[in-house]
Amino acid sequence: MKFTFIVLSYNQQEFIVDNLNSIAVQVTNNFKDYKCSLIVADDSSSDLTLERIYEWVEKYRHLFYEVRVLDSELNLGTCKNYTRAIRYVSEGEFKVLAADDIYTENDFTDIVNKLKFYDSILTPVIPFTCLKTIGIDKGESLLKSIFTIKNYLSKKDGFQSRTLSSPPFTPGVFIARRMFTEEVLKYIEQYDLIEDRSQWLKIFELNEFVKFDYSEIPFVLYRRGDGSVSINKKNPTYLRYKKDQAALTEVQIKKSKSLMYRMFYRYVKLIQAIKSDFLRAMINPAVVTYKLKWLFFKSFYKNK
Image 1 (cartoon, rainbow, N blue to C red):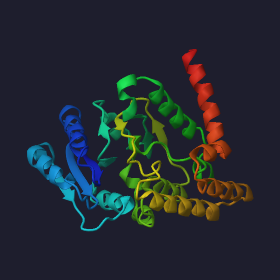
Image 2 (cartoon, helix red, strand yellow; image 1 turned 90 degrees about the vertical axis):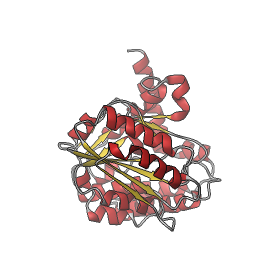
Image 3 (tube, rainbow, N blue to C red; image 1 turned 30 degrees about the vertical axis):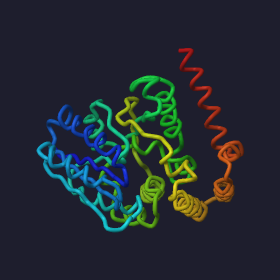
Image 4 (cartoon, rainbow, N blue to C red; image 1 turned 135 degrees about the vertical axis):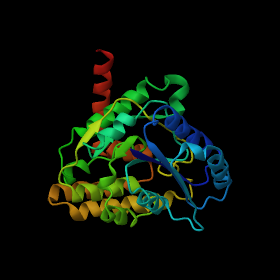
C-alpha cells in the first residue's frame, strides 16, 4: 500500500521542521505497513524554508519510499502549487497539509483505508491557539469543529445545496485521489489562492453524489495567526484572496438553476464586499443560522 504526504510551503522557515517532524512520527508509528512518499512543494520562498527542507530530507530520507522537493523560481500561488504536487501522486491516497500546520499523533490509517469506499472523509481540526487551554482531544474548539462537520453533512446532496455552505475545515479533509481528475485540477488552476472552495465547486458539478464519512478524532493541528490570508487584511496577498472569493461567488451565481439561489449568491457577493467583519457576520443569514445552531448544539452537548 502506498500513501503520500504532501506539504505546501511558502516562507515558513519557523514552522516547516515542526510539520515535517510530525510526518516522521506518523510514518514511524502508524504507517509501518505503507510505502510512504513525501512531496514538499515550495512556492518560491524568499526565507530559509527551502534550506531547512533540504536539511531535514537529508536526515530523514530513509523513512520514505520516495521524496520529491518541488521548488519554483516564481510564486505560483496556492492553487497551482497545490495541483502540481497532486499530479505526482499516481498511486495510492494522499494528504495535503500547509507547512505551518502539524499532524497529531493519532493514527489515521483507518481513514486512508476508508477512502476505498468513501469519496471524502471529514475530520475535526484544533487551532494551535487553543492547545494550551483545551489539549488535543477535548474542549470547545474540538466540539465546535465536530458540530461544523455534522452541520455540513446535514445538507442535501447536490451542487446547489452543498455549495450554500463553505467547505468544511480544509486541513482536516481527506479526499480520494480518484476525485482529482485532470478537469478538476485544471479548474482549480483558474484561481490564485482559494484551492479548497474551487475544488469542491468542480467536484460537485461533476459528481451528482459524493459519498462522505466523518470522524470525531482530530488528526491535524491548525495554526491560526496573523499570517492567515483570509483574515488578515494587512497580509499583502489579502486582495488576491478577495479577488478569488468574488470570482467563485460569481460562478455560483451563473450556475444556479433557480432564481432563489441566484438571489442568495448575489446577496453573498454584496456581503463579501463589506470591510467590517462584524457587520458581514451580522447581516449574513447563513452565519446567523450557523451560530444559533451551534449554541443549541453546545447547550445540548453540555447537558448530556
